[in-house]
Amino acid sequence: MRASTVRFFSYGLAAAVGLAFALHCLPLRVITGKLPAGLIGVPDQYLNDPSLLRARAATFDDLQHMTGLLYFLQQPWRWSLLEAPKLANGVSISLTDSNPLVAIIFKTLHPLTPWMEQSLGPYLALSYLMQPIAAVFALRGTGCRDIGSAVAIALLSVGIPHIVAEPAEQALTGHFVVLTAFGLYFRLVRHSQTPLRLLVALSILSIACLLIHPYLMLMVLAVFGAGVLTPLLRGQWPTAAASGCALGVTLLAIRLLARMIGLDAVQPNHVALYPLLLRDFLGPIVRLVPQWTWIPDSLPGVDAGVAYAGAGLIVMPAVLLLFAQVRSQLIAAIRNHGGLFLAVLALALGATQGHVIANWLRYFSLVHVADTIDQFRVSLRLIWPVLDLAMIACVRFAVFTRWRPWLLAFGVTVQLLDTERLRADARLALSWEATPFTTEQARFDARLDGATALQLEPMLACEPQLVWRYAQLAYLAARHNIAVNDAYFSRQPRAVSCPEQRAPDNLNDPTVTRNNGVVTVIDGAAF
Image 1 (tube, rainbow, N blue to C red):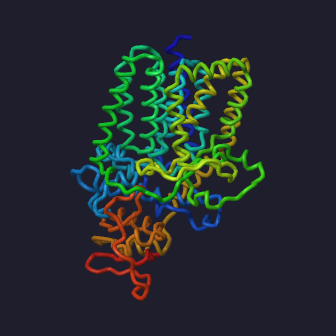
Image 2 (image 1 turned 180 degrees about the horizontal axis):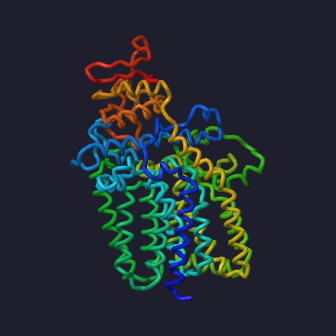
Image 3 (image 1 turned 120 degrees about the vertical axis):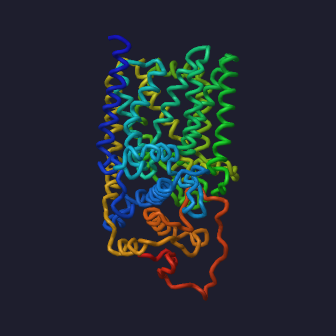
């Protein structure tokens, strides 16, 4: 079969897998960009279901993403481009993780697509579609170009748990950019002479990721850095120098862009040190082992992302390593791609964020984490490129076994079966967007008609336990395009702080008032 025909079928089948994945997981109203029918959140009948605590917590992020996007879409074009004057002192929507790149594109094209009310849902569908296509692109970069392997990695890529486990994190579901970076890396280091177009592509991808989500930018930059280190370790000095210059220019551009969009005016989070739990990576397997020791202070109380590899990606490497030829090829690959090995090792260490804990036993701990690293506080997500590389390696090294078709079929089947519950939970969580307002919510929403501002007291910095209500109220203000003085942000601006605590004898009873167009809500008690 001709190479062009193989390429056509490889990408065509991957696109079919991605389309089926998107249609399987996403309701039509999400794909078509409809606004939620009511408040985004968990319907009352699900509030006591402990298995849905992740989905309930994720609605904080879903609400803030939609809030920033709505303010941005409803304001006229202005400079600074991403600032929303009506959102809590005019902060940038880059602080609400509203996917500024897609927001800009959507706002530009909105006159041509007036039926679409928001861009986060369509981007989620695009991410699901592109995930297997990017996985095939990465695999073909390693030199493995047969159709069977392409189908295997396409199916494995939609079974990676972190793709579907956090549907409220729409920007982070664009993980296909990391797989694209892997594909560019493998093509970059394949020859001694570096093609300029690949460096330009990696540079543009890295800069674009800053406008999608900072975590994705960090992952792509790690792969870009591997494109510098690998030629350096091979002694290919001209290639390493060219890649290093391109990376330096890219970092400078990112620094300037971060200042322009307001990401340099962010407080260190200091909310917690999120450890990479080995039990999270291995998932249910480790839960079979008795819990010898309980160290409550060592475990954070906040979910820090998904690090589970999936049963297929746990079993397949273990089986592959039983073959001597696979082991020798793996050693050769590590030597040949030393820069990539160091890059993913750095990401894995970054994912520990100072702690290594297995089965509730603390094995390693650092006291201090730099503020710069602290901005990437949900550090479990830094393990995602490591899982991607493991997936690519499993399919690539299966070529060196006589049992490749059976091994790939088994791994894909186990992976998809293991993660079906996650896909079902994603469908359920996204179906909640069709839930209408409750009677009390609708009554308060009507009070915002014709208002000019929503005043929330006290400031969220003073009463952080009100975060859920303030996220809801800011979203309602955004729907009415009225100013709001406070909101929940993923990255807290430095200008926001608690002005003063209310004296206990002056506490107001929860109430809602309206005066001269300004609706004031005390203690978030609007409904």
